[in-house]
Amino acid sequence: MKRLVLAAAAVVALAAAVPASAQFQKPEDAIKYRKATFTVMAAHFGRIGAVVKGAPFDPKAVAANASLLATLSTLPWSAFGEGTTGEHTRAKPEVWSEADKFKAGGQQMVDALAKLDVAAKSGNLDQIKAAFGDAAKTCKSCHDNFRKE
Ligand code: ASC
Image (cartoon, rainbow, N blue to C red; front, side, top):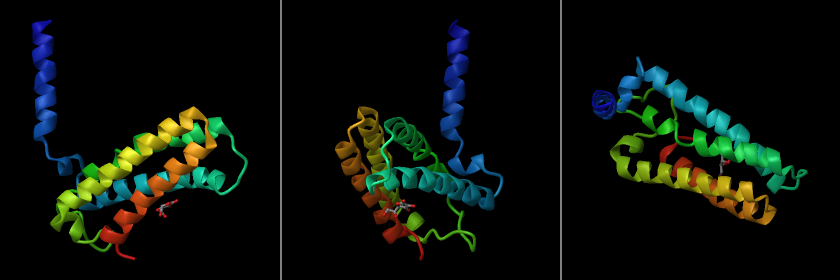
């Protein structure tokens, strides 16, 4: 048992020691990965957005979309390693030169989508609308500051 615990601790320590960029073979792979996560997020966010704008409200579908968003929103950040720039990304150099601000912005989106998930589970459309609006602001703020048009 003690050995198992030590082995587990070693794995955790190793995971912490490996830089995020090492998860990807080359910068293009990281760019593709993070773009894919944003693309899938936009699809699920858009489905809730349609309901917010007046499409029929199916609470279960909204909750399923929000649950996915809460998970998906945690994924792209490890794919913004140093050097993952170039012609295939719209990420501005500020992603790296203002890394703390970028990370904080990303965390705001993660937090806002966690709140949207809670609101969606409540099934209360007014709460969902409010949480959706707050989350959309966090998307926009990072796009304005860190994404080329
Ligand atoms: C979306 C989407 C975004 C955000 C952003 C919010 O549905 O694809 O990137 O909302 O437009 O301002």
